[in-house]
Image: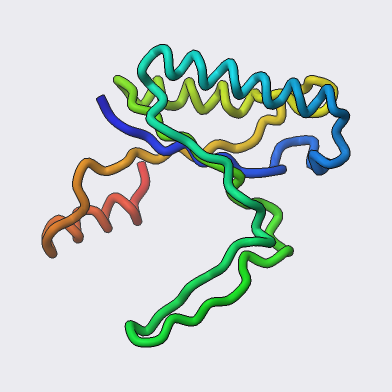
Amino acid sequence: MAKYLLIVDFQSGPDESPMSEWTDDEVAAHLNYYGRLNAELIANGELVGGEVLTGPDLAKVVRSDGVTPVITDGPFQEFKEWVAGYQIVDVESEERALEIAGLVSAVPGRGGVPTQQPIQVRRIMDDGPSGVEEMNAYLETASNPR
């Protein structure tokens, strides 16, 4: 079994209308789809966790020199994509993680049409690099995607 992080981008499908413009029925269909999908993944023992995140207007960015952290408002409004939430799945294969990501991307939007939100799929490492050699190996995979 391997764990994968499914990162849900907000409003980056073909219909980029804000959810505030959706009808109550469209919002309910969207939420009900997620509820059914999550219930199925829990029943299968595949859903480890997941959360919806607040919008970027409430986010903060922290940078530190090791002495004084500098906290600013962030991400800026010019970003067209932002992380709406995430799920962690524990599955037998990358193929299953990709299949689940496809189901998440198909969540209905306006008029019941799938939102086609991009879902970033990233394997969660069992252990982080503990030495220079392991870090170099990790950096090689990070900078040279398949």
